[in-house]
Amino acid sequence: MKLRQWQAECISLALKKYQTGTSHFLALATPGAGKTLMASELADQLLKNNMVDLIICFSPSSIVSQDFSESLQLKTRERFDGLIGARGRSLTYQNLQYLDANFWQLFERYRVFVIFDEIHHCAGSNIDNANAWGEQIILNIQDKAKFTLALTGTPWRSDAAPIVLSNYMHPSNKISCDYVYGLAEAITDDVCRVPQIIAIDNNNISVVDDVETKIFSSFKSLLMESVVPYQEIIENEAVIKYVISSAQKKLSSIRINNSDAAGLIVASSVDHARQISTLMKACFNEDSVVVTYRESEPTIIIQQFRHAQTKWIISVGMISEGTNIPRLQICCHLTNIKTEMHFRQILGRILRMTGSKNQEAVMYMPAEPKLLEYAYRVKQNVPFEADVVKFEKMKTNIKDDLNGDEMNIVTFDKTRKVNPKAELELSGFDNLIEHRAFDGISETVEEHFLTSSYEKVVNIFGRFQQESIALGLSELR
Image (cartoon, rainbow, N blue to C red):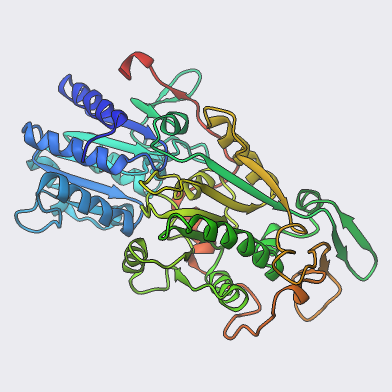
């Protein structure tokens, strides 16, 4: 496969730095640009030039780890299963804490090239401020690997902690990348699609309790008064139905030209994912694949979906970053994780350019203030004028399809005592879409591992703080 220009430039610069005594190289490339192929080609050249003996790759999930293993094997024609005779192994960051002394002795005996995919998950400039994964890298890899390559599409951490193996310029504390390939360049080069972000809102919202009824003109005004938490908005049946209605209509239009185009919905919990799947089937006769941590073989499910004709996949924490499903062109942000890193990684799943006729890439999300802030920052990365961010009112989208009625009033009824959670109702919605029973759907959303621990696992706490990227332009060419 012929390399893209940015991939060839990055490989050339990395080899030059390695040959002149630099052991670590940090490459920033926008999600969907082709970091896996670039890293695999660099690994192949290091092997052919007899600069390294073994290659170890670490990545944040099993599906990405498998993709890296396959890419390395294809490019180098060597095995990467870790068995006798293999040239290396592809592992997840979770494996770092379970590798024994026999494994780490490889770094003493051989010249090892280590690839870190999505390095921002690993924090620490020293042992004192490192997270669990960063600590293992500092102790066992930082000064022992022959060469290292760190890759990221989002080079920051929401907790503002330093990224492991990274250099920062003082006093500005700006992170220094060896090579940068941003979304603007990728769109110009036809490597990535121009994104479109649809923010769904409603201008007639009422909150009813035992004392009074309050009226709100948007989800933003509703959330600003902390009357209803965001979690209840994304869990609500009416909101889910509306997002699905808009998204499936767009996907159907794309599939007129791209018959294998697909959509991704990122849910907030296992029960939430099942609720969405049930609604899709009951109300729109759309089948979907659900992949969560509860499946025994989630990697196989994702791999099968990658090459199938199924339209929709619903995920909880399984398809957010690094996962390569090129046929994805629609995504729905219905998760309660509201960090910019996670937002951009979800958006990145639909940006990879393919050879298909239609190259639209559309994200649907509620018009939540922080998500809108991230969306407008994405717009700033688009190198020309484009309607990247659009608003869609809930009353206007589906009246032509469903009995001619309009969706208008959104009501949060706080007076009911059966369920302590606020229940969102949409006036007239049950007349618009056939309502069916949801067998097996719990009335309360389970507090499961991924919902409670995902942010802890990847250490994305606190307010988003993006690091500025310092790059010597002369090094790019």
